[in-house]
Every structure is written in C-alpha cells, then in structure tokens.
Amino acid sequence: PYVIVCNHQASLDLLGMVEVIPDRCVPIVKKELMYMGTVGWACWLSGIIFIDRHKREDAIDVISQTARTMRRENVS
Image (cartoon, rainbow, N blue to C red; front, side):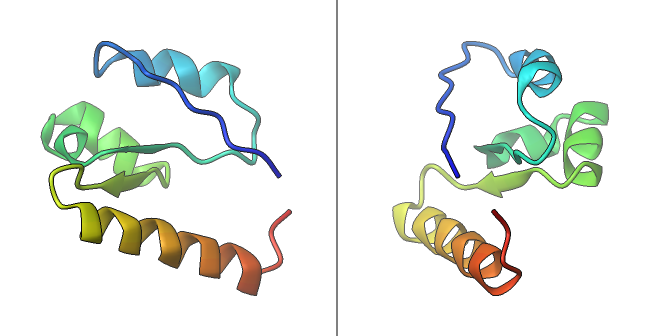
C-alpha cells in the first residue's frame, strides 16, 4: 500500500492525474470539486472521496472511515 500526495494547482488537474495513477488508487479531493457541475458528477460517479478541508475533524473522520473500510474489505 502507498499514498500519493499531489498538490495540484487547478481543479482540472485531477482529470490528468486520474490517467497516471494506478488502477486501484482512489483520489481524495477537496469537497468544493463536488459542486463544479459536470466535473463534480464525474468525480462522484468514479468513486472519488471528498473531504472538507475547512472542517479538520470531519476530514479526519472521512479518512478514518475509508481506512476502516479498506481493512474490513482486505484491500491491499
């Protein structure tokens, strides 16, 4: 298992990153992308995890839930 950290400068950079990251990797993106029309819908439908960067506790909770799900489903 590994973590890829990308500090993209524009919201549309995510579309390019999706092409180069491994198949089993799921991006975690800022929640604001969810409200960007077609881009938000595409992100949501592809299973991207959204976190609220302005609410630290909520972001930690989402990441913790994701980690628990990965352990429960034995995702490598």
